[in-house]
Length: 197
Image 1 (cartoon, rainbow, N blue to C red):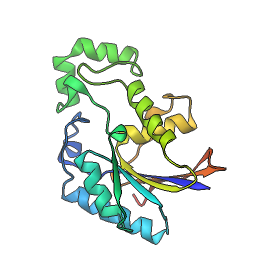
Image 2: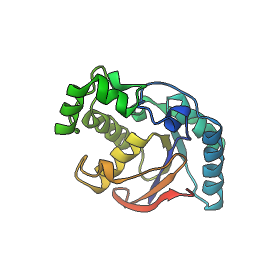
Image 3: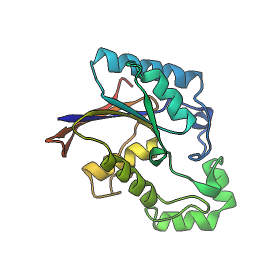
Image 4: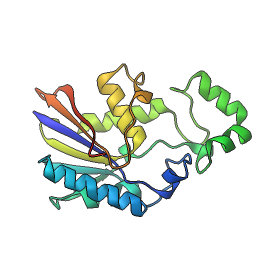
């Protein structure tokens, strides 16, 4: 039985300011570093072991991965587990988006699953690449994956709901740990959520 251990990266200033951002590559802040250190302590104290560690190639995830990697093994970067690209919404607050792009927001509300952000991507496209990543790893091993809110929610929705139906039903906090056991290397069981937060 293998484990999928998901860790959301530590807080960034853009998280704190509640901005749309996915593709914008920013580091974690001081709060984020403390969250990552706490996540590392929780992994150690709860004896959550891992055979491999993967990270989104975005700096906020990779910085978090270097802090939580208590075994000091090689971190494998993977672009398939980057955050969703919000296109023209990147770097804006919700109210700014509503003012600048009201027509786009109406389209988004009508069909959020397949709505493709201009110069970005859709939640459906995000989930497709995330599932490709999931299918590429050895589920008989314990895999630690340091990544983003959208990626984690896409995975959880895929594993425990109908494709994207559960996407908005999980609130994974910065530095939160999610543990999934794969029974017989195939059947997913949610064993821990937002551990240590």
